[in-house]
Length: 197
Image (cartoon, rainbow, N blue to C red; front, side, top):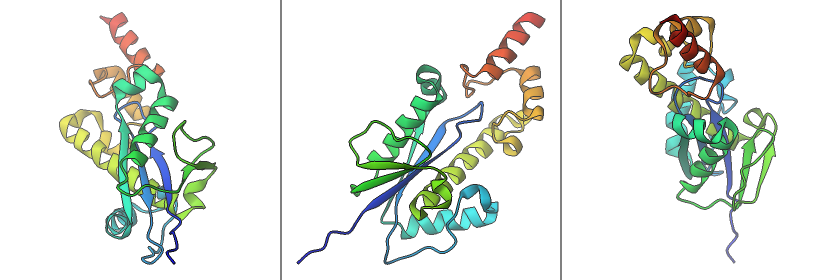
């Protein structure tokens, strides 16, 4: 008699707060026969540890997938709806269909999957921890690539979050095409630049 494995996918997002770049999500189905030590909320891990786990998760997970929503989609939909879209894309991208999906946070997308939202899930559920690590490393690498493209913006340091340094640079240089134009600090920087001309 065949027993069906309980295929649980964990989903998490990174990048709701930044003013620039995609919101990045990941979905991961872990392999109970191939456990990964040290999974926890990506924010509590050193960069070196995250990078090591990133590679290990991609090798050992039964399935993993990255989803995203672009700045244009964020501007069109709003950040919450764009995050839900990115989460749906991540789960749809899994090559194994999960029986159940656990999402970090307090709400799930309106989708076809049986699911539950788990507050602080990235520190409670191994699958969500794994997803948080994949999403964070992916987005951080994209910010490093953007830093190469626009070295004067400091993306490698602030990762697009609205720090004081970032806000000063934005006010001085104005937004690049990768910015989320609907976000208030970006609109303010644009308006200030228009007014000072």
